[in-house]
Length: 231
Image (cartoon, rainbow, N blue to C red; front, side, top):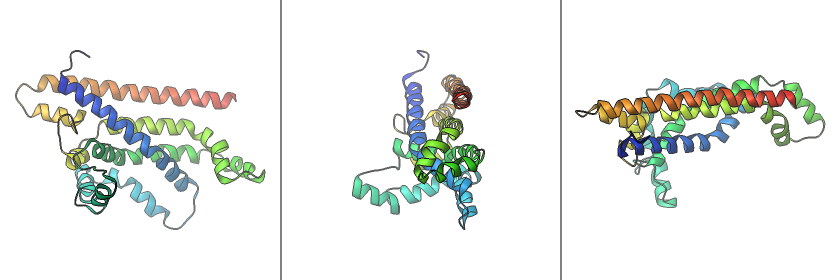
């Protein structure tokens, strides 16, 4: 991609970095939440479901502002992490990953939850009757069967994180080389004269990455499904 300038290339690399870590860190939690929503009958489950999907309902700017209040240097969680562990989210690329992960989390949970609900509970019950623990049942029975849904959810979440703008720019601003992701770079280029060219190139890159992610999701999910059926 020699036709991309240094600032454009930095935005692409930062977006890939942010999206990768946002997806990787949130995936285990998404699997756990999806299993709870699909299998548990505990009270207050609808409240948990509402909280999980809240980022899809709230304006992204509101989510970003809430993150700033909570994880900012003066926020309760942000101040504790900064003083105790030296971890800072506000106006850092790590904050961009946090915001992108939260915005993509509902899509990941939904895809995995649908996969869990498609698994026949009798298969899990049969493994339990043979003396397997819940963790072993999940690892040996449930997880292999829901793997296509996990892969699809992870890749869709990755693509969503790549396109996150409102929450990210509110929480970490638009600092070139530090927090300027693809969407915020496109926005910045469109605010200056002559920026239409770089913005158009980044739009093309965004479309290519999104389409590649979706095609990869379909291919990997089908490959895993064929392997499960053949085993």
